[in-house]
Length: 119
Image 1: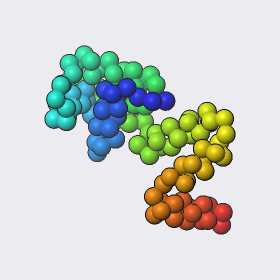
Image 2: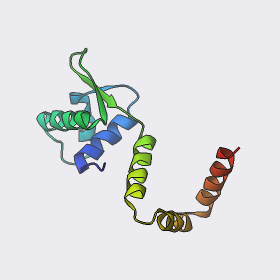
Image 3: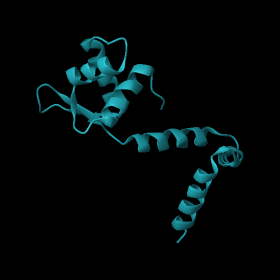
């Protein structure tokens, strides 16, 4: 599932955070990273949407509520890749083009991962 621009910015922030964040902390960090700072109500709306989609964990026991990423950035990327591959008519052709287009060092890493998986 792809994310909108503000959703992606908030997820990047939560993935980078070392601890759960309040909506105010999210807004303040967005203000440091972006030119246009969204209103706190917008941040709360987007956090609520991300929570409903399963991207964000909300700690209701604390006041103010704290939010954290439900999964890692890497797990999200894997899900995106699986979604794209799952929708492909010819998965083998997609994989062949993907592997053919990656950097040789990444191809070597893929070979290593595949060989260690088979052991």
